[in-house]
Image 1 (spheres, helix red, strand yellow):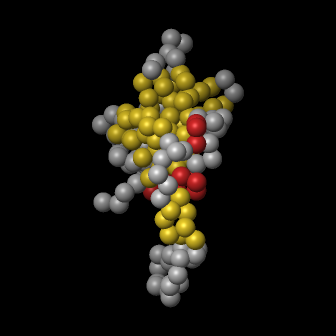
Image 2 (spheres, one colour):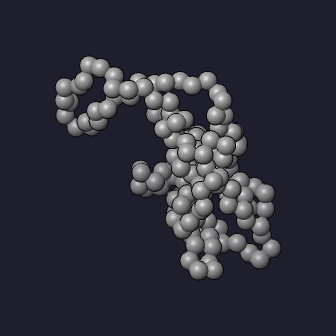
Image 3 (cartoon, helix red, strand yellow):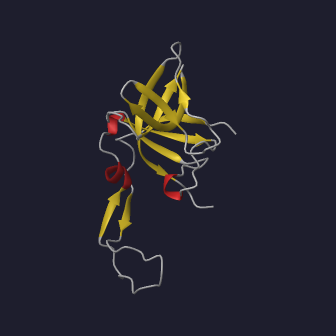
Length: 149
């Protein structure tokens, strides 16, 4: 399955703010421990995740090119990307790029003059740009949101 992105959808800094409960305590993934019975604070996830609201957009991932054997590097089909256009992309960043006008999400490989876009899924070869191709790094992925199945 090839990958493509749906979006961009602008992050609207004037949208309704939803302050969600923020529990200051971490949640153990091993044995249960006594939990705090109160909310420490409330947080708007936009304020928690977004540094540049006017330059931040959301995309929806379609495809499996960013599915890795390492769970912490996996961006699955249907994930929502939070993309900041104000950040300068550098080697090893996950970026949204436009190749000849088509969006894709890949890891940026940059060494000297060599530039490639690399998928996490080994079934997809790196995209090495030819002389005739146009690449625009559209923004840097700062987070992704995945709903559990």
